[in-house]
Amino acid sequence: MDLTEIYEKGAAYFRQKEFGRLMGYVETGYISDNDRRILDRFTFRQQCIDAKEASTECAVLGVSLSTPVIMSAMTMPIPAMGDDALMQLARGLKTAGSLMWTGTPIPKNLAELAATGVPLVANVKPLKDRDKIYAELDKIVEQNVTWVGIEIDAGQGTKIGDKEMGFDCSPFSINEIRKIKKRVHVPLVCKGLLSREDAEKCMEAGVDLIVVSSHGGHTLDYLPHPLQVMDEIAAAVQGKLEIIVDGGFRRGTDVLKGMAFGASLVGLGRPILYALAAGGEQGVVDLIGGITGELARLMTMVGIPTPDEVHRNILIEG
Ligand SMILES: Cc1cc2nc3c(=O)[nH]c(=O)nc-3n(C[C@H](O)[C@H](O)[C@H](O)COP(=O)(O)O)c2cc1C
Image 1 (cartoon, helix red, strand yellow):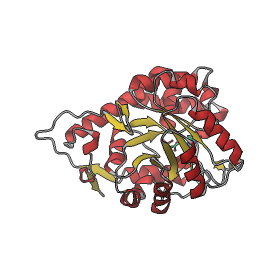
Image 2 (image 1 turned 120 degrees about the vertical axis):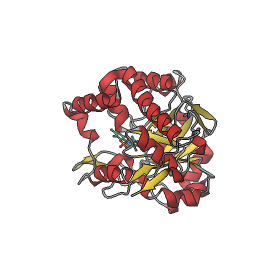
Image 3 (image 1 turned 180 degrees about the vertical axis):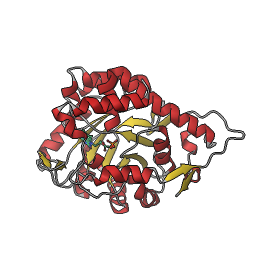
Image 4 (image 1 turned 90 degrees about the vertical axis):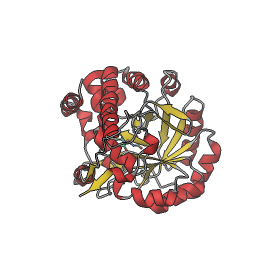
């Protein structure tokens, strides 16, 4: 299935479902329009003489992937899409050489998902019941996950359209992040940064990776697209932390723009759900394969043979 078909079929599926409202955005929907507007601001400097065929293989904190295109943190509404939907997703992402990332609720079968061989990340929200978070973290790390993620941006709960989502959260302090880092014995990811200040605090707390993200427009309205803040974050981090980015990335061209701004990996939220809806396990393989194929073709024609060599000068702004 090609990408256009995946997106059309996926969107049609969610239009028919009550849980399809999860594809929406908070309040005015500004974030959805702004994501596209910012990504469309950049074109590419083609440099094809002497171009070498590019490889998309990459490694982040020792995890080898066939592609920098990964799943962003999500669980809802996957279980409602079919009893086997999480397993189909895990197998599809494994075949595609990508990475799986679960969100809220934390799936009970993380160990089974990890047993497919897919690198697996599991996230926790900053629930006000901190004891519950620690208990959840302990359970997660026992289940062979590759990394553990904490959401720093869900501190005031979540709302889609005008509808409140029921999570009783409050923001983490830097000391709590330090405590969590000490508790888990796998790399710790902080998800949902949009400023230099939070990046500096993550570094101070000793986290291993950060995700620059507006949570897919599910938390606050009028947040910037990650590319609008990547420069200040990359300047603060100075290559000492790996950066992941997500928000509105839909094609290989979008992914290369995220990488040009300094991201090692680029996450997909809604596209993963569309692919699963459109074609199950094979839909996921086709989505990641389709976007990665576009990325490889483009990398070749801008003179970038490997993901490590991507740099900002391949972009033309305006
Ligand atoms: C249905 C849905 C559920 C999500 N659940 C979570 C979650 O549990 N935890 C989290 O950190 N982010 C969650 N997100 C945000 C995604 O991880 C990601 O940041 C966002 O979807 C990326 O934008 P995109 O959908 O435009 O690709 C969710 C997003 C969607 C669409």
